[in-house]
Amino acid sequence: MKNLLEVDIKVPNQTKYLRLIGQIGEDVAGALQKFNDSDPEELAYHINLVLTEAMANAIKHANKNDPNKDVHISINLTDDQLWIRVYDQGQGFDISSADMQTPDPELDHGRGVFLIRSLMDSVKYRRCEKGNVLEMYKSLRTTHSNYSEE
Amino acid sequence: MIVTSKDFDKAVVMSIEEERLDAHNSNELKSQLMNLFEEGKANIVIDLQNVRFIDSSGLGALVSGFKNAGSREGNVKLCGLQKQVKSMFELTRLHRVFEIFPTEEEALASF
Image 1 (cartoon, rainbow over the protein chains, first blue to last red):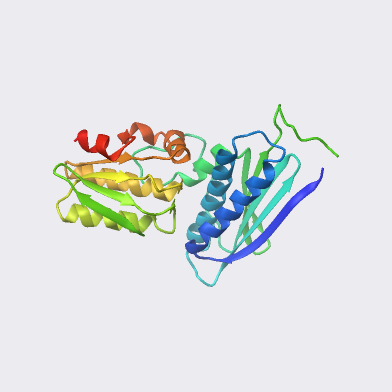
Image 2: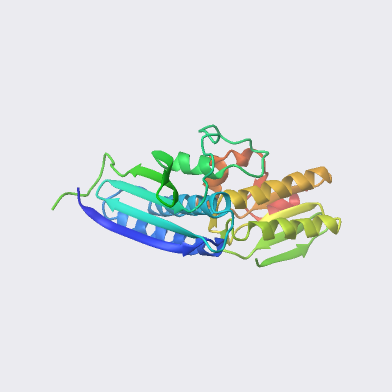
């Protein structure tokens, strides 16, 4: 399995950096187009959204908007797998209550984890050395892939 | 957040002049809507044609406005949704909550 791309970035715990991280996600999606036949615009949007939601959760719920903390994001792309890990420095938050059911459309909150779960194949939240990591995985295997091993 | 508002007989059209509606600026959208409600304007069309990206906070701010308008016997309707933005409304079933129109004119005509 070739490691095509690895991005590691640490940003201050502020929502103004969501745009930057989302844009990096869109650029990674651009790299994926070479071997994946999904709709380029849709894939770029989905990766942008997953990163935005995960990072906003880390900033607000785990790091409690503390400006002295950081969020560390790692994106790992191989020929058939996308891993996104978002590390916080907080006490963690409960993602188990947000299951796969569509959130009540009348509620004005609580759609973030649902969106991540809808767009990724697996989502885990676990403790790590300095806090917690939200680990998200998506398989990039497609039945009509035009990518071939060199 | 940059928004422009135009008053019409039946409703106010609020255009979001931002490419992203996310956790960084969604609270500002909530406040802008509250300002209109406090001026007694409860029928609002939100034009999203410039919005290329919306996250759960942006959707939440729109739902909050929708509920506030409803409690004032008004309504919040949407127009100009780009393809990917519209798909977020479908994924979260919010396309069944909001009345969504292709254009500002059609949205205004529905009041």
